[in-house]
Length: 338
Image (tube, rainbow, N blue to C red; front, side):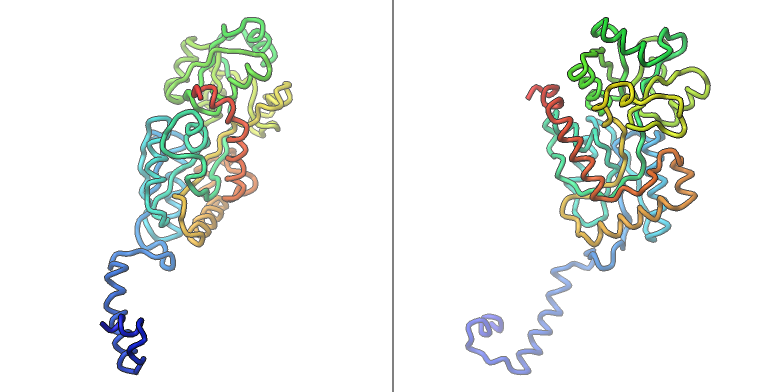
């Protein structure tokens, strides 16, 4: 009755009415907000989930746990890493985009699961259904051959692949990964067709190459692959960035070998949050990530080789993902049959 009277203008705003209104607001506000409600002003006030679309123990999982530990130390709340592999990363991404946009759910974002898979399959989300925070690591791709391979140079490999279409088998870490897309582009744009053989990550790919089941691998240049180089079991033929990397200075890039367009399979691993997360929370997460990547202990755990020289913030990360969508879109649609 009090509110109706004020709204209709039949009551005058006396001191008693004002006091009653204040009392009513004080009673209603806790009910509306809930005693357990979280607000951006006191963020974070509870534990944070960090979803990883890969199995435990791999390089991306370890990167997520390293960053999660730093966030815990820096922000004062536990970061619980939850592995959710499956369906080319779409299970984890669907979990993210369906979560509350309050900063208490993050995911490890990689281009294949976040923006490439939705171009190929109907997975319930699209490239724009999440917000980027920043990049943790960037990992080139490398074309490798195994022990006893007849190919000692990339030029020899590509020459035979062109002369014998589809005869060379190249393993990749999944059918919708950037490596698989790039090999499709290698055939479409440069007339060098190979047979792409998808595997479930390096745990399957490395034995396949060692056993001679494939002629080469095109994979992330992760620590376990580098260990094969150090042991003399694998030989690197070419890498994906436009410029050579310091830790494999003798290995030519695909760009300098004449494949100037094949520079998009360097994997970016970063953090993402649900669309609609308050900008001030994204700011805090981004600044915490930036600080973490300057911490010597974090850099050592991540491996200095993979930490970007310059921090890739949320806007630059989004721009890189958007560029991948633009370049990979036509190829992805053909793969998906759209």
